[in-house]
Length: 358
View 1 (cartoon, rainbow, N blue to C red):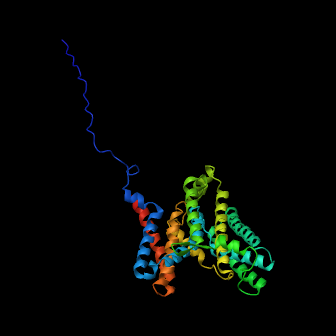
View 2 (cartoon, one colour):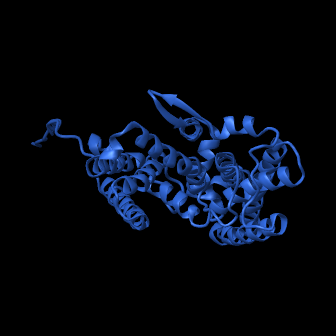
View 3 (spheres, rainbow, N blue to C red):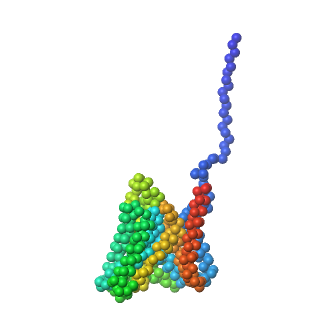
């Protein structure tokens, strides 16, 4: 007699639902961390802190005309800091930006005055020269593969020497002649160096240009294909080229954009003061780069914004004028800039690491 065993079917009980596991990549970060990850948030908070500091320590800052001066100083830095920031996002530097401003102004002034031509001829030729300098810088960087630091350092030295030597050769002096009585001067001044009244306070037109350029640069970076190209070539140009990004065009155009900014600021200086000192501009390139770095642009490229340098330039203008209004020794200005730059770099590093850990 045989016995057979029948196996009972196994009954499986589904596990009780528990908390969903995450690997850190899909976890939702706190809102505060997501806000801090934005490159312009830190510099905005810094700009507010600097403004409040001088508002308390320098009572003249509270006057409307004083704030107009602060915005004016900020705008002359900010207009150049914007293309410099875009170039840095694209992974390059331009150390010739400061003296290029003077080169542009000298070209327009001497060409028009020495040849007795309408001032607009000098303005247009200066634009072509500025774009040409940017084109040459960009072409050399792309063709040689050398760091843009070295290429534009050479351009800086060349332009500095040419500015001084040619001005002395043509005018017999270190400054250009007064062009205020030349044809076309009044029209050019109205465009590049005029003022308008707001609530009884005179505001320079450069403040408007500064904000318009910032809005345009933000739109380009965030809403256009070209903006994607800028971030791509700054992040990894080889990978960008592999997916069809025109690396050569993008980098050269960014250098030319810096040339355009140098031309615009040079025209403002020329038509504000009617004459140009050929030895000026040295050191300004470091202020433009610092404003971009304080605004959240990484030295390694591939990250940044156009809004951040706006607040960075405002901090510079606020410190520059605030020291004067507070009655302090203006020699402290560069020390303040150094502290702001180091502080911004350390804060950006801390934010970056904090966001990565979470």
